[in-house]
Amino acid sequence: MAVKSLQYKQHTFSISYEIINPTAHIDLIFLHGWGSHKNLMKHAFGAHLQQFRHIYIDMPGFGNSTCNMALTTEDYATILESFLSMIEADKTVILGHSFGGKVATLLQPDVLILVASAGILVPKPFKIRAKIALFKVLKWTGLTQLRRFFVAPDAQGLSQPMYETFKSVVNEDFSEKFRAYKGKALLCFGTQDTATPLWTAHKIAALMSAARVVEFDGDHYFFLEQASSVAKEIEKTVLESLKH
Figure 1: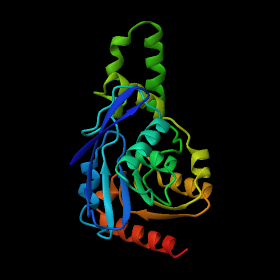
Figure 2: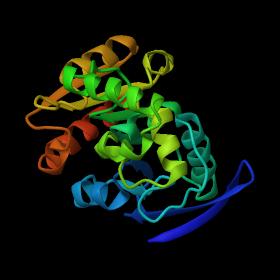
Figure 3: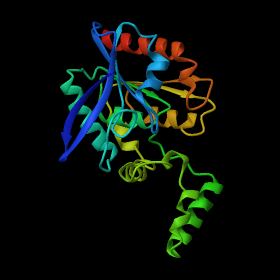
């Protein structure tokens, strides 16, 4: 593991990362999802894709990377753009899981691997909508001390800057950002995923000029058990891309 510091909007960020297969000629950058870290991605893919130089990154505010200001998804992409330049990494192939998929899309790699990517708005169940409405009433009446009972699991235990970040990124419609991506894309989604349902993969693919959807049995973290199969699809996609 290594750490690099960089400046962004008068704040200092320490970015933790790890490189595997350092002599390989094609860079493959891994971006984890919200509330996760680089070690989860390394656990899944570290033993696969040996022809690539793996670059595992803790995004600001997660794992061993710091964050003391509220960020947007665009901020994450700008910070990572600077970071990749610092470590002389190419944006050839970027894999993003969930929230990391949105950041990866903004980075405009040659080949984009979206694994259960967020970015398409999924209607909230009635129970969640009712909970939100009740919290708004309590907030209006001043009973904000009950907030902890209404905070989403992904937002619990966050620092104030990261909670503000969460509120900024959680309900983004990334349709136009997906439409703006002009490279080759591989979309790997789980058939039992409720966070980023399979239908969202097909919606994203329809927005892109060159995208392929591959369905896997499993939930939002299907890749932990099926990394070998995902790796084969990545190899096929990158090989096809290099031919053109």
